[in-house]
Length: 219
Length: 396
Ligand SMILES: Nc1ncnc2c1ncn2[C@@H]1O[C@H](COP(=O)(O)OP(=O)(O)OP(=O)(O)O)[C@@H](O)[C@H]1O
Ligand SMILES: [Mg+2]
Image (cartoon, rainbow over all chains, first blue to last red; front, side, top):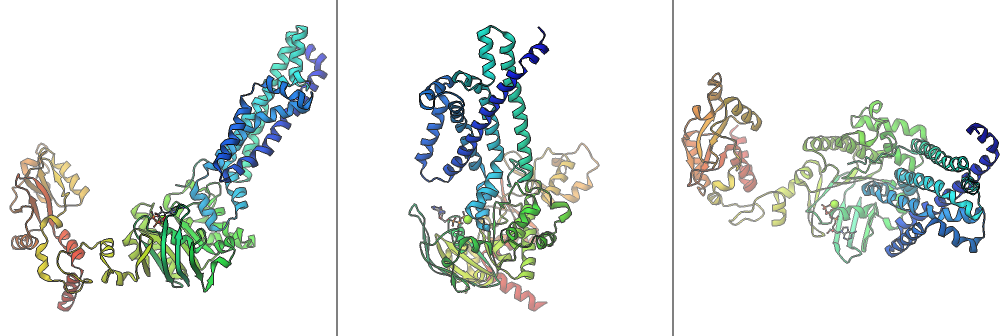
């Protein structure tokens, strides 16, 4: 059986798997951004350093739980299906996005911030017009790394019934069909590469729109 | 007018940075805060735009307590320039200059011409620079932008915290000159922090000298130079202290000129050359140091002789000759510890332009030049130099 006829035959399954995979990935990364970017900013402004350490400790800890175990833990809490898969992968996305947002904000030249304050930017304007655009490269690289990892981890989501490209791999294993396994794996790789390129483009667009962000600061 | 009334500042860590500051800053004047590092200059300045809140006491602008005002609004009406420039690296020069008008919600149609006007004011062509980013400008150009950004919304008060101290000496001079020119046109109330006395004397109408969180002396540059309040001020403005009696620089005993020795006056790094250098090399050293003769010394700095530019040029054709072949012996020299009048007498009797100071082992330790003598007199005996100057004036 040629590859082409195989792909044609399974086009429906592959399409559904791809769609599920995308939904899981996008939802968890978006959720990660919505929670972690503001949290990172809050931590930058937080005066109680022990709280920062605590939050980073927890986020780090989440990162170290093996993905299979995390999925298993979530079953009794959230059942099976899409929801626990998204939640689990979201938990993984917290650390890289949080860390990069925090580092990005910290990296802004203090004299730039001082002059912004002295000139009459209020706190909100400093965050939105100075710190956020200047830390955009950090935040975006956090988002890109996370997305690529999550696309790969999302292949496990099928184990708790969330479908995705992992579904192809699992059924390939069950029926001993190598082409299915390869399609699932290759699909995830291609998806990761495409998404990364897309996000790179988004980053360039954002940078263009909200000002150039070069690492060069004024001396 | 800006008034400080019994202002104290104690930082969170308990450090008292300002002690009972009372000060009036006149409208339309450039007031320089000067003092050693940590004396509280920046702290005092930042009280004016509420970047720092006093622990006690009041700051008034035109009679109004600034604590009654919204800090963000207040800052938008006060220009602020800092040493590290603080331009926004992600915005073009044009956008950087326009930030305050934008914050103040000016009509966008008015902003563009204002930006161009400001850039021309500091001789930066808008066509060339408007769309560049700060990192694409030299330090001096960035600082010019820092200054016009502060001027953009035409504030009455401008705060400048060591604005030029990170620049090379030439750009610094240029920016000082531009500041003086701008100030003549604009007549802003400018507070200018520096720790360079020459800079303060050059740009300021009034100088406020600070030390350990207190104001030591306030006055015009002229009055501070003529009547330093105490030894601290005297040292700070670069006058060497005298051994004899001296009150306020008045009534110096001219006899005290005898206490000076050549060691205090001589330049310690005279231009020298080693004996085996070629003649072209010697000329290069001369032009580098801008002198017309070189002392020839060996590795132990033992003085062997002197070569003048005339002699060098005379013999220049002889490619194989070295300095030691053409040098001449030293005619006059003095040893360290010789009194200045004695040395001056030798110089004037023998019509020397300079005089080597050589120790007992024959090593060259310094050189007395006419320039170094005049500079020394100016530092130690300003009144004598003044008298001298007025005598000269009468003769003329
Ligand atoms: N936030 C702060 N907390 C504690 N101490 C501070 C703080 N800011 C400044 N100080 C201290 O207050 C004193 C005065 O500081 P200030 O910055 O006003 O000095 P300065 O005269 O501007 O010095 P420099 O010439 O070095 O800029 C210094 O001893 C400094 O260490
Ligand atoms: Mg300072």
